[in-house]
Image (cartoon, rainbow, N blue to C red; front, side):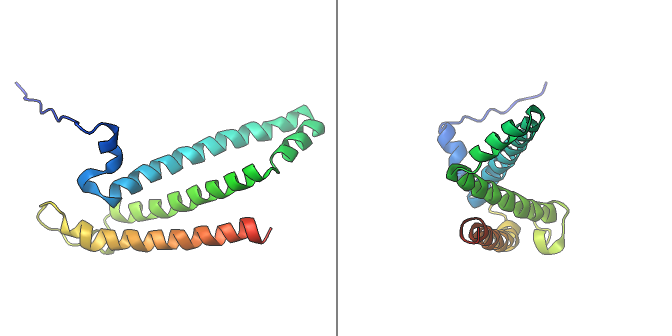
Length: 147
């Protein structure tokens, strides 16, 4: 007979959002998933918006006029932030999952807190997030200042 272990969640949704002992990596996990869902939502909206073209040029021009509103300009920036973060964090995850030596660190005894996570993966995370911030700032300049 197999024994099952039950873990009690006394913190509820706050415990899920708080990350507990996982720290920053847990927040990156949540933001990565939310960004992916946001990109999926954009693709579905884009397909709907593009399909308006079959109703004729008047419908198309009306839809394009609506999309010129400043709210959609801000939405475009949020979408760009999601793309930039999701892409760069995804590259970081690929490097870690495929086991590149500079991204994972040396093999060691798995005792928490994991030294390879703190000494190798966290600096990689910081570098990638700084690059993402620079890319997002450049995109924001392009969207809001240069246009």
